[in-house]
Length: 423
Ligand SMILES: Cc1cc2nc3c(=O)[nH]c(=O)nc-3n(C[C@H](O)[C@H](O)[C@H](O)COP(=O)(O)OP(=O)(O)OC[C@H]3O[C@@H](n4cnc5c(N)ncnc54)[C@H](O)[C@@H]3O)c2cc1C
Image (cartoon, rainbow, N blue to C red; front, top):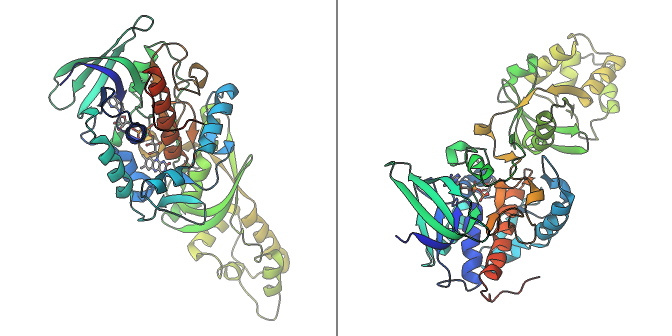
């Protein structure tokens, strides 16, 4: 193996994968010597796991509210978000023979509904002779060069313990965040990055379930229902799943970045839950049934629209007793179901979170090139940057946009003419 490279990329995840695709399409092949170092034995493991194996790679709707920074930098996000928004990922994949489908939430998937379609595409690009790869190899430290000098990257084979050192003119940290250590990202790369002089804004689990105070609803593990969750300016109807510690399910995952950011900042988080988000199930619907010639128990009155176990637990939690139902009590129960509130104590830990909020401070990165503003020829791409997407395909989209920017800026840095037009 060579010991000296033009570009070394740390991490063979989503970013590195799309980078190889853009490089190949841009005609880099054979013009640069690129090494990708990955501590796992295979590349693209998160892409393979994404979207429950379906790879939710982007979304039909993308707004600035879909991304969160622990320490926002408006100069960075203004430019970077424009690049995210203007990238037609679906069109790009279509041009590369990956047709897409979307669901009712605008989430985009390969038409095959299989992440293997995406990993196959990336693997084909990685096979190009332009890229060398080192798997089962963790980067342990990086020697920051003097202005414009060579990076010295020290690595270790995680299976044999063998040490290895390589040099590179440019270095890219595409090593992900601190979530889901089972797939290689345990946040330890942040320690290496900090030694290059960069600021790390923190790490908080996101796209994960939420812990609530103990109570009767914790006995409902496995029960799902449709609910509207509200927290500050977040509001969304979707499925939640009760667990023995709180709430999970898609709608809780959508909410989690907003709550996690505030809890991380030491704030309290109190969430409103509307268990009756269907307009037709108004108080009138229930009062019209209560107090007519058929007499109902209050529990029975609502059991046509809710799981009875949920209702019993909800009654206990909210202090209702089971009794014959009057119109007044129907209105009270209806209102309690619409306006339930709970504190969120914690978000679930990193090993259950799909992404981490936080990372390298955006202020220290040029959004046009992703080059460090502190160290020449050092680049950051993907989840390692403190600009993390919410649930719905925003993170793989962000990683692909980073890959695209990188391929352009490295082409320019090495004075290579690409076949692609830049915007
Ligand atoms: C279970 C799960 C499901 C997900 N589903 C979706 C989804 O449907 N849609 C979506 O948009 N996002 C999803 N995500 C998030 C998305 O996968 C990530 O945000 C995205 O992959 C980040 O890309 P990246 O290239 O920045 O980092 P990653 O893809 O995380 O790749 C980083 C790589 O760097 C390697 N690495 C780290 N440190 C070192 C080191 N010191 N030396 C060598 N290698 C190192 C890691 O092993 C890893 O392979 C999901 C995540 C998980 C965990």
